[in-house]
Amino acid sequence: MTQHDPVAGGGDETASRKPKVTITIDPEVKTFVERQVDGGQADSASAVFNEAMQEYMHTRRRRRQLFHARAAQADQAKVARMIAHVESQRDQ
Image (cartoon, rainbow, N blue to C red; front, side, top):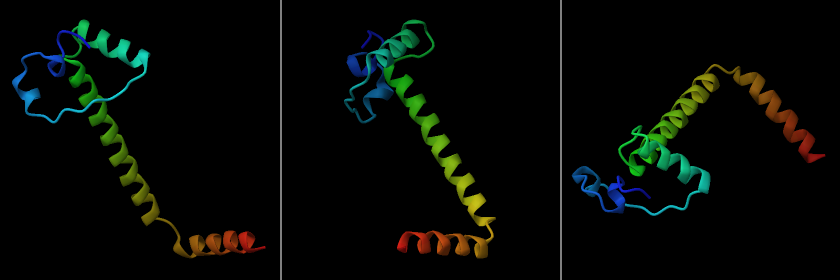
């Protein structure tokens, strides 16, 4: 990708201990990643993807926590009535 990318042959020792993967990305994503690295906002393409995936994983965990918190507050009798209604509609 760029000369700063440790996966592409740079000398970052910590990156060499991480598992390597090959991915296919859209051209606009490639351009964005290269601009991040070339502009000094990221040390490497790997760093851009690692940060993006960390944010994605955090968001998914948070959404799951919020879902479970909301589900725990649900009126179980009302939920049971709603499920029964939906199932009765499906069976007709």
